[in-house]
Length: 195
Image 1 (cartoon, rainbow, N blue to C red):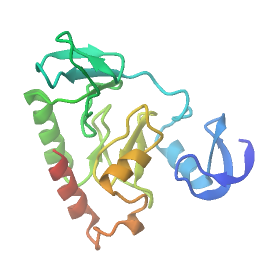
Image 2 (cartoon, rainbow, N blue to C red):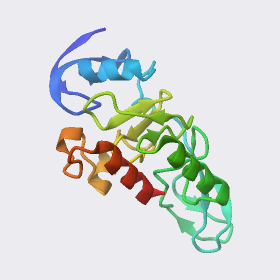
Image 3 (cartoon, one colour):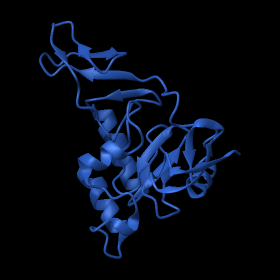
Image 4 (spheres, helix red, strand yellow):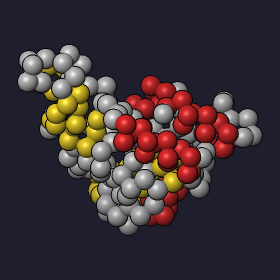
């Protein structure tokens, strides 16, 4: 593992001593994030190259459902749109969506009932719990999930930064003003609001 000069960690953005992230010379990470990635089963750089993504979307104009390989979608009815993608559900490891059918809603409800106050991996569906102070969880080698509310990032984003801007979720548990000694209850309430 090659040690780099001080800089900003590509995962937690803290300024610290860096090492190559999973043998990637482009991205450096601190020891804590490397350890966390190793425990999460990450075997290659999760930041490059960006994995391909597909989009199963519903046209807001005619309600037609179709697949697209671009985030800039155009329906057969002629309507062009950029969908507001779901941050709590996706169809398989590479497919994002902007609508939920009854089967999807049932799956989310079952996950909520099964795992209670913990979040789940959007690819494999297993429950995840935070093992350190960071609110950014990694699973299946490609997923980044917010331990605070269960929402995940999209492939076209760098980590959970955009999600945190939209939601106000803190990077670290100690910075979360909503949690006053009962993390399990607060996470459960946030999950309930997202479903």
